[in-house]
Amino acid sequence: MSVAEARYRIQNLKQRYVLLRALEIILYASAGFLLVFALAGLFTTSLVWKLSPSLLAGLIVIIQQVLHYKLLSLSHAVFIQYLNRHYPQLEESADLFLQVEAGLNPLQQLQLEKTLNNFNFLYPQIKVPNSLVRSFVIFIVGALFYVGLTAFVPKSILNSQSVDNTSLERITGTNNPTTAIIEKLSIEVTPPAYTSIRKSTAESPHLLIPEGSRINWTASFSEEITMAKILYSGKDSVVMKKIDDSSYSASIAANESGFYQIQWLHNNETVSSDYYKIELIKDQVPKVTIDNLNQFTRLSFSDKLTVPVKSTLRDDYGLTDASIIATVSKGSGESVKFREERLQFDKPQNISGKDFTAEITLNLNKLGLEPGDELYFYVQAIDNKTPTPNYNRTETFFIALQDTAKVDFVEDEGLGVDLMPEYFRSQRQIIIESEKLLRERKGITKQQFNSTSNELGYDQKVLRLRYGQF
Image 1 (cartoon, helix red, strand yellow):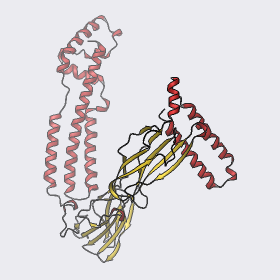
Image 2 (image 1 turned 180 degrees about the vertical axis):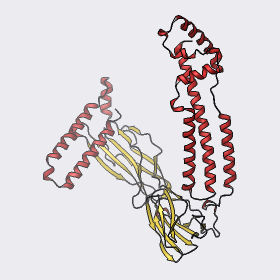
Image 3 (image 1 turned 120 degrees about the vertical axis):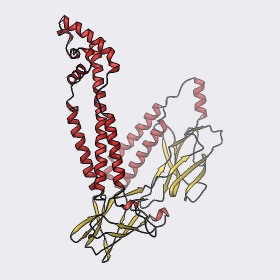
Image 4 (image 1 turned 30 degrees about the vertical axis):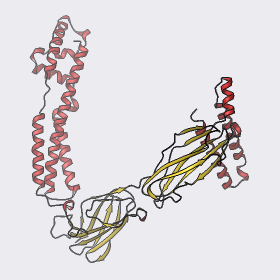
């Protein structure tokens, strides 16, 4: 064994020691956290007041143990001393591993060689100090105390059951018997109309509702209070409207997930309930696929120039529109032209529903395709979400109508087709038209400029689609 290998093994032992001590500290801190959390639960039902001292206790345990074991300042020299004390076979010479060999005298070099041999033999048997078993026992004891103590905690809102399944009973927020409590809480959830989901009454203060739903809280207090409000996600608050001396209500539209808390004022004392979550079910974008075509299709003029397209469309609440956006590319080089058309499906003619298959037959003759032309198309779908619907589309599909005369000529010559010059000529034409548009900008209306600019942008996009595969 070399000195470098011995140093490497010492480093491994040190890392193993730090890892074991870290596991011990985590177990000690977890036991402290559980014990303090359970004790705090005997005096309050507020999650914040239970978590704060528990986390502090766990942090104190971690800091104390780290300082006790000196994990932040543990050096190789300290570990070498441990090896010398506990393994007499090393003859208290393990510190030679850290010295430079060139600076050792002949006697020290002989001792180093002997110590290296002994260390090589001892290494598999070396056990780093740890108290993992004791820390695990303490963690188990802490967990048992937690289970035992939480059996005496007053039931929180999570465990309350409504008498008539339409309201939530007795949300306290305090253990003071002279403070007003919420004796009855009713939560009505009204989903957006486009979802076609009926209004319902929640059975738990923790809400899982569709995005955009309106939530209405109605709280009845045990005594007359001064004011009540809803704190939403810790940043917004909604003052509850007074219905009578002991009843209040508030309403919000939920557009993001978060949490809320009810807070009220009684005898100049502010009382708060626990925190409850609001989790939104997001409106998903439509799912659109084309099922019966490959992304690239090549046809000759002698083939049947009709292409059936079958698309599956799905949405969680319903679709309002779906169509095919088709672009015909004619010509090449600087004379390439593009024409876009929007095609409606043959069936169903009226797009509605959550899950259906739409079909259309593309007639290439009616679309004006000639030999050498290409058709690019995709299916797009829009759902019924309001006010801003979700949109999705498929990948772009390609149908090329081959110019057989050109193909035969190339095959006879035995030469390949270099499409890049055509791409550069087409790109040059777009640049020329863009420069012309910039020169004429002051002489045309903003609407004309934007329209021509959008057309050039679309031509650039289709040009990339046409030649991107090469």
